[in-house]
Structure formats: C-alpha cells, structure tokens
Amino acid sequence: MDSASPAVVMPTARQHPFDPPEELRGLQAPGPIHRMTYADGGQGWLVTGYATAQAILEDPRFSVHPGHMHSPIAQPTAVSALPGFFLPMDPPEHDRYRRLLTGVFTVRRMKLLETEIEAIVADHLDEMELAEGPTDLVQAFTLPVPSQVIGELLGVPYSDREWFKRNAATLLDVALTPEQRQPAVGELMTYLRALLRYKRSWPEEDVLSGLAEHEELTADEQAGLAILLLIAGHETTANMLALGAFALLANPPRLAEVRDKEEGAAAAVDELLRYLTIVQHVIRVALEDVERNGCLIRAGESVTVSLSAANRDASRFADPDELDLTRSTAGHLAFGYGVHRCLGQQLARAEMRIALPALLRRFPALRLAVAPKDVPLRSDMTISGVHELPVTWQADQPNPAAS
Image 1 (cartoon, rainbow, N blue to C red):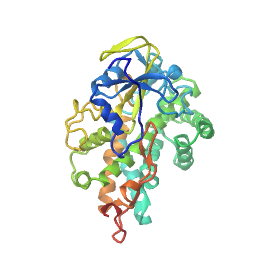
Image 2 (cartoon, rainbow, N blue to C red; image 1 turned 120 degrees about the horizontal axis):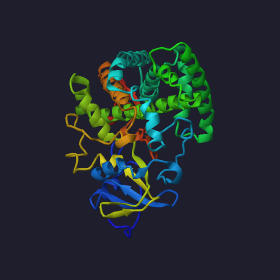
Image 3 (tube, one colour; image 1 turned 120 degrees about the vertical axis):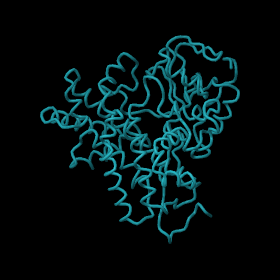
Image 4 (cartoon, one colour; image 1 turned 60 degrees about the horizontal axis):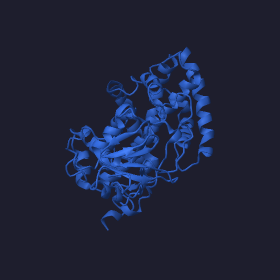
C-alpha cells in the first residue's frame, strides 16, 4: 500500500469480546500496513500483519520514546515519568535498567513461586465458596490474586498487603484521570522508599531486597523499578484471567479441556494469550526513513502495531479464529516482541496455568450469571478485558447463557 491511499482511523472497540475489531481483520486482506489517522489528527501507519509486526518490533530504527508519539487512544499515564520506569526508554538506557531485573521473572523463579501462587489461589477460592455466590469474579478472584502474588514477589509485609492492594488498584485504574491517580503514585513511592531502606538492613528472599542491593541506583530509581514490576506483574494478568475465564465459560468444550486434563495447561495458556491478545496494540516512532512492504515510513512518523490482529493472521496461525488449546502458538505476539517483550510474561503464564484450572475444578458448575452480551467490556482501551464478570455455581440459579 502506498502513502497516497486513504488513511484509516484505527478501530479499538471489539464487536465480540474475544476477537479483534472486525474492521482490523478486514484490513488484513489488502496488505499488512496501512496509512492511518490518529486520535489527535496526526498521520502515521497501522500494521495488521504478523510478519511486518514482528519485523518492526525488533527493528532498532523504531523508538518507544513518547515525545513525538501519536496514540490511537487518548489514555495518558501517571507513572511514565518516574525514575527507573524504563518502559518508554530506548537502548542503551532501557537495557541498563532491564539488566538489573533479568533474574526477577525467570522460569526458575516462577517455579519457586508456584507454591505461594497455589496457596493464594486456594485462599480466594475458599472465600468464594463461603460466600456461596453469585459473585463478580473480577473482584472476588481475577483482580486480587495477581495483586497478592506481586506483593509476595516484591516482599511487601503481610500487615501492609491491604493498604498496598488499595493503592495499587488506584494506580492501575484506567477509568481515573492521571490527577486522580497521582496521590496513589506518591504514597506508593514514599512507602517503597521506606521499605527499601528496611530491606537494605534486613534483607529477605524477595525482589525488593535484591533491588536494595544495587547501590548504583538512587532510592527513587529503586522505588520506580518496584512500581514498574507492580504494573508488569499485575494489570495484564488480572485482565487475562478475567477474559480467559469468560472465554472458557462461553465455550464449554474448551472449558472441559482445561478443567479435566492434567496435561497441556501450558499450551492452553499460550493459546488463550494468542486468541485473546488483551494488549491490543503498541506504538513505535521511526528514527529515520524506513521502507517496509513497499511503504516509506518517514522519520518521526508513528506506527501502531495491532498485536490482536497480528495474532489472528492466517498466514502465521491456521484457523486463527478458532480457540484450539492443543495448537503450537510459538512466536505469538501477546507479550510483544524484541527488546521490549513483556517483562512479566513468565509470572502471567504461571498464574494463569495455576488459577484457571483450580477455579474450574473447585466449581465444576461455574457459569455466567448474566447473558454473555450483558458482560460489560473494557472498550476503547489499550488493554481489553471486562469490568465485571458475574458468575454463579449454585444449582438453583438460572443459566442466562442457555436462554
């Protein structure tokens, strides 16, 4: 496609909760890259093809620096300017910070954390069972589990967990303005600086103790990195658990596979990640003129990479609109690609692999308490999901999904 073709406005609202916007899929046939108009009127590019998405995400000629970046969604953040918060940084500054965290989210560390994750999941399932239902699965399970897990990983004292969880929820609430979230940012930074001072004197086997050992970092950088870990290990996982549970409840054969099969949980998790791709897009800015698929992307132009569309590219995944829990999903882009690939991906995988089967086995009659069309979706947001997921498991409750 050449630059003279009509520009499109990127759709973000999903017509179906588990699929990318239909307009995005329609753009894939003409080609993998398209001129687009951003929310502020700026002009740039939209990528919907898998191979082109992968190529741009690993190309050092594209920057993540937000200075000249246009976004399809007006969704400012209250935390990107924090010291140590390296998500909007390019190498080598990005690499300097990220190297300090290479041991935090390794597969080995996640294996060590699995016992704690299992206990946290069991505790919340116990509380659900005592409450008897119906309940909102988001508030009862999919939101508090990742919050408690990241508190365990960081080393937040148990007595502070409820306070920490409340402020973390405020920080991560995209329905709030940056001004409304800023007090939580300030309180968390103050709290984390104090806790890091304590960890320097009385270290334990946790992430904050490890950060406290890095004397080359300022106290603010250490606290900023801790907030980054909070976000990396929480927001996307909470939304994946909720939307993943919704997808399985809407697809009983696939639900039975997750509930009844002891093997294959890892493959099922990655297929859910590919199929749902809750981080809808990422943005890059060209540092120089780059030609890609016959299109000249000029220096300074923004490129929006639709991860959700790329993960449904039929040239990469056969029958991409089918939820096939046995397929190989190697190379899916749900966590991004290249040097900015999601830092918390192993934690997200571990939580989903443990939490979803445990939920379905504890409540074999679990079902939606409302019709699927009445589940409120997170629309027009970078991270998709659901605001609420009303469920029940009581025999005397009606089944709206069957009506």
